[in-house]
Length: 331
Image 1 (cartoon, rainbow, N blue to C red):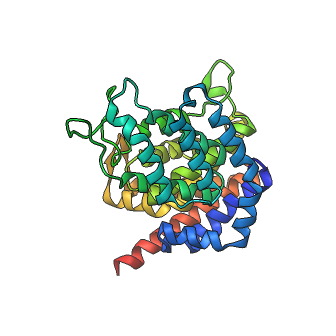
Image 2: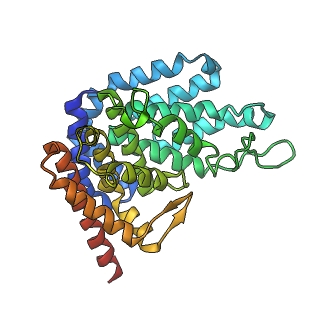
């Protein structure tokens, strides 16, 4: 999974072949079916089996997951990633195992550990778009499960200041994704703004963003992905790339911003057309035009590497495709 050739090829395939021509015209289930039928994706999935096992081994070794219910959830997720169980069946199995525990009451919600498994899987396996699709389907299926009711017939919430009920709100997952998946700080020195990300951190960031853009496009519960996209644009394309430090950081910050547009461009354009403001995030057509201009400028910046410039120009193409798609739908 961490092979740079495999992950880079898979990302390029998802952005330019699928995002432009296929993904915008397919629902997530039919997209997954098409990916499942692809011999290319099958071979990639097979080559990633060791990474799935590595994720499962790490998840099982946590001292906080020794309980049989947590271990069963890990087994089910591993089977899901290996295409041995469908997302709706996995959702029913996992929620069914946690439900008695939730009904009994708790000091700290046991589902936090399950959400942690999801965050770790996103970071370790997120550059495999088939696994990402499975995760999105899984979370959508979980959100449709019946409410968990306590002994007094009231819906169960996680408590501790977290809102929402199990399972329709996926409570606390948005916070955990923000804190434990997306929050990847550059390595020191002392001033964070002068730090650089390692190659491993860049790969992890791209894994997380790949999940984020697919969830933004097809997720049913708001988990703050639009906010993450905006942050990525602010860091990745609204900043200048002139000094050696800035040019070096472009290698980390531009590809994630471009990836959001690759699959999520249509959704982002819809948010901009509506003038959407949510979770402290603001979208408008003015900002859309700004982002498109910035991607073009980055794509023409000869000081940047060819790969960074290609990411930017590809994002600009995705934005143009999103505009064309929305225009066609309006007719």
